[in-house]
Length: 82
Image (cartoon, rainbow, N blue to C red; front, side):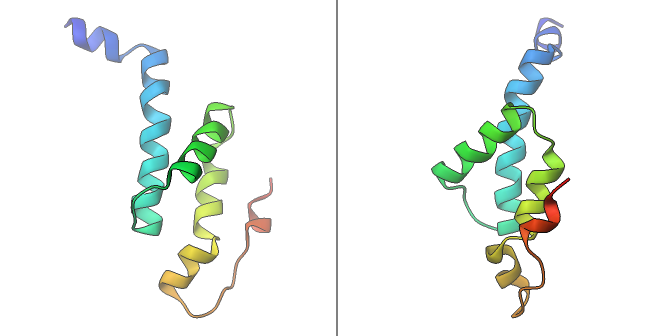
């Protein structure tokens, strides 16, 4: 019961959600381990209040992601602008 109360605090959820979300993007889209610089960059973006949608867009329009699944680069992160 006490553990449930602790993990339901918005501060705890936010502190755990953003790092897990960033790590999930690396594993899910890029199929690799995180790199510290990139992880810290994206975590800073999310902790600064940015929408996770922009981060996902940047991952799927990245050259690294597109090179994994195609020989043509058809997208760029310009498409991610609001």
